Structure formats: structure tokens, C-alpha cells
Image (tube, rainbow, N blue to C red):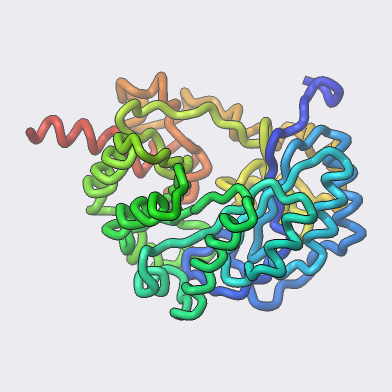
Length: 345
């Protein structure tokens, strides 16, 4: 496929700053208090112009904490003027009424607030927040509702807060929302550390994770949106085709470009937008290398599984994060848990 034929990605992720007001142990981007080498507002505007040329539909502004970018609203407006919508993912602590109104005026289409516990205690264990910060997050949820901004709640699920995940679903229902994004712990960024893996990796609690996923999917009053790190989830156990570098990409604050958020290891870096034009990077074969990864190379239980034709070995980026091997079988497979549960019965 040549450059003229490849259509632009509907949604991309952009780490507008690696700076963050929190120090979550599991942070996939390893956000810091004092980031360096970040793109200037002028550079960002040039990138937005290039995104418009290749046909980007929506920018998902992330971090770090995107609300620490004082130019965020200006960039949202700049993108909107060029036909690109914007959404943001925030930890919610800094989202007061003034900022909420500012984002709405700029033209934000939706806000996703990350909250990993139904109580201040659980959230503190996951994100090291204070009770006051937790209260501010709850206030941020109310502000989005008050000002009619489309709102999503995202919850990282790990071994440590798995028992609270059902309460998170109940919380979302009480807030009058109809869906929740569920993110499965993956050892990337700061999450690579052995201590955090011991706390959050499921290991012997895979059956509990399976039961939770099954119950959540069968709850007709809410739509659980399970992220790719969960792999195929019950009851259907199918899995989407990989869209990395085909329908999405992820831009770091220093200009490094990756095919998606599941492929942030240096091995998958396509290039830097300061050194090569976005149009060239978007059409680089490295962009789609993982999406086009030959699944017949996958080794182990996946190849002998009767669900392989629908699952395709699940997410290769997540597999690599857990195993360091693109050809390994998917290591967090709920379908295998289901099979073992049937056999034991």
C-alpha cells in the first residue's frame, strides 16, 4: 500500500506531557515530576497540521497528566479548526470547575477519568493518592456531568484491587453512567518493577479474574469495555484484529512514535517526529509490523487451542510485555481458565 492509499487513523494517542502530579506505581509511561525534552507548542502545532494532512480523526490527549499542559486548550482549538476532535484521559485531581469550563469551551468531545478504587483506601494503594485528592476526583466526575461533557470512567484492574472491581462497576452505575473501561495490569513502564508485579500481576488469581470478567459481561445494566491486555473475554472469547499502526498510533511528548500504547518498548519505536515527517513515519513498514505479524509463528498452547482462529493469539504487545517474546503464547488467557474450570468440574 503506498502513501496515497493508506488512510489516516480514526483515533490516536498523544502524550502531550510526561509530567504528572501523581506517582502511580503501575504507570505505563513512567511519568515523572520533571520531564525533559518535550515538544514546544510550535512543534505541536506543526504535528497537528501533519495529522490533519494524513486524516487523523480524534486525538486522545494523555500523559503524564495532560491537565499540566497549560497550552492544552489552545492545541484542542487548533486541532478542531483542522477537523480533528479531541478527548482527554486524566487522573481527575486537577479538573476543577474553571478547567472543566475551559475544556468545554475549547471543544473537548469527551473526558476519561482514571479511578482505581471505590474507596479512598483502595485508590491510595493503587495510585498513592490522599483522601483530599480522591474527593477531588469524585468532584471532577460531578463537574463533567454538570456541564454535559461526555464522561468515561477507566479502572486499572490488578490482583490488589480485583475484589474491589465489582464495587467500581456499582459506583459507575450510581453515577448514572452506562459503561466502564477496564484496563488489565501489564508490566510496562514503572509496572516492570518486581515489587509492583508481585502486587498486581494475577498469577494464581486468574480464576477470580475470569469470574469477574464473566459476571461483568453478563450484567446487562452496564457495558464493560475490556482493554486488549485481558485478551479474549467470556462469554464469546473472540478478539479483535490488531490495529496497531493501521488505525492508531501513539506519540510521546519527546516526539517518539509507536504503533500503539501496547507497543511502547524501544524495540517498536518507528522513529521521531522531530527527525522525520509524520507522513513518512505513518507509511513506514515498521508501523504495521506487529499488526502484520505472522501468527503462524506463535508457539506453545495458543497454536493448539480451538479458539485460535477467533483469538489469533491475542495482543502481541501485551505478550511481549509479559514474556519478552513475540512468538510466545498469550500469558493471561481467560479462555484457558474457562477450559480448565470445565475439566475440573
